[in-house]
Image (cartoon, rainbow, N blue to C red; front, side):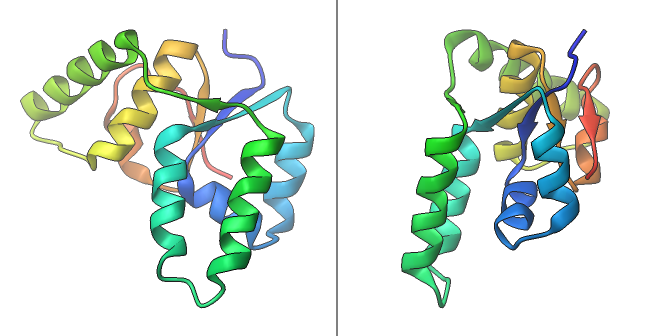
Length: 130
């Protein structure tokens, strides 16, 4: 059982940082929130193109100080391989960064919170849309 433990996709973190109230309410009501290391890379990439680059980087730092960041392990690498192979066999590829996020979530038994529908292609992944 995953309970009320969530791994946030980049689009959810971005929405939260843009002050979307429903996202903040969900985060405040969660038992635990985790940030995948992959999302940090995507956020730092996005910051390079932001007109508010310094503020964006400051916000990323605030996120990493507030919630645990989960890195990739050997087990998540194995899960990544299994997920990617299954998607290829189905003919349903999705972005590799999202496969990494899913692998971390499956390893830690967390619910992925996202606005991307392609996560539904991953068998056995718990997903919520906020």
